[in-house]
Length: 252
Image 1: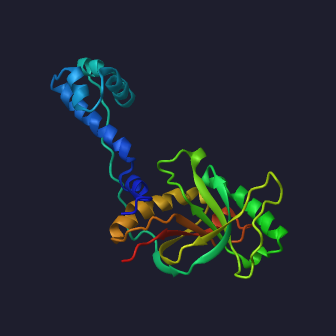
Image 2: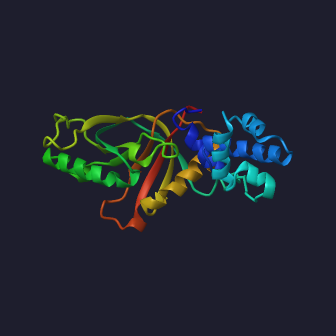
């Protein structure tokens, strides 16, 4: 399985990250041991905590009371997380073959939902170099896994395809402007889902792709990043926007 996408697939399929699952299972074990009357220091040791104080902090954070209070008065907490289930045929997913796509890109750091600012910088740069934008295609390349990366540290690329005879010098327009770079979208097979609607609704489509469709399909992913291909004109209403979500497939 792809190392890049493993955690995202796990989170989408099980509704929690792997560290969260480990913590929850530890707490389930702790509750059972406390109910049996096992000494608290022994419970902490059996559940993998180095000392009673760290165990007490973790227990109180998850259960709402200390281990001693739980043993004395009890508490109700649901430590079970239901596995996400859905219909793997809910959306149409196409198996598409793509050629290498030659792009100019600008790196974006931060929320994926603000990459439009970086696309603006890229459009300004391309216009300054005489490229008509209506001849180009726009892509977002998402390098980070949002299920285990802080929003401020997310990395992505705003990309625009360019013709083979377009070979400008890649320099910023001003000292404080971003520097463009070449980027080549990989050739090969992709799973493609066309998302229709606002960008803010995309996380649910991704959760279904990673957590439902992919496990049911029997396919595996390469370590290449997820790509979004923006199909609609930039002036489209949010509810009318069409975007292809592209997952890089390994050979069947």
